[in-house]
Length: 384
Image (cartoon, rainbow, N blue to C red; front, top):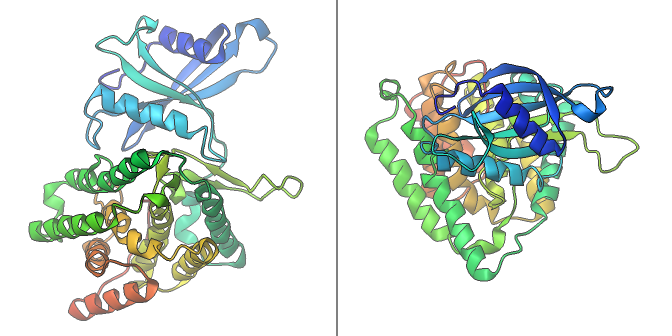
């Protein structure tokens, strides 16, 4: 497992039985594929005491050891344990069945060569990301953007219940991780192939980090902002369906892969989704205009007006910087021009220098960049 080989079937069977609390028989274990962070297998099984029942399925997930701060087994274990906890506190999230350390001997005391894995329920349907690149800002799509904002309003309404010293420490940790975590600003920059960075100088990367640190220092005492968050709220982690007409609690939103924080900064979730609208607008029009601007405005204005959170404008630039290097990533999203990549990162630098976010400021910064070198649009897309 340390080299991401398929786990031993008997070990998986024992793991599932432990999660179910009943003896189980594994009937299939098929590789689903690999992503930037991990690898997954579909496990099919039956409960031995109820063989007449239909087969059940779970996804077995493991994390790759290369990059993103996942270098050591303890890093990967911590990530899966946190995701397991998040699945129980983030509304609408798919269920985590459990986390275990698998070895050839089954689930045992953690041996030196063990690898941690997680079992999650199977999510059916397509993600918002599967059609994100073809949105037209139709009335139904604008309604979806409003629903996403309303989901975040409900999610973020649960404030952290921590003693003040712990809240202060946790909020500083959230801001610090935005810069230095292996999956966030500096960690993502470290995964850029050096040969792909002709569009961004070393001095400019250093300026991005310098101004991010200056802003972090200004923000670090805002611990009252801590609330329940998703941590990776973009279109590829969101599944949308029609809300139930009979069940007010069924908003038609299912979430995948909550990450990093149980208590976090709401600006992270808001701009994680928001930057993808902005990025796609620039890719398709060269400016922050068109249907993706309409979708952004519907999403962002709904959130800010209902939350009355004007202070979010001062926090967004820090998380925008992190998300900018994700959407500009040459491996994550290869089919975009270097002009678009540079526009996103230099826009982040401009927002950090200003210490605030607004759509009017984004337009002004883009005007300044366009005057220096006209930007070009291109097609396609992926998530932050």
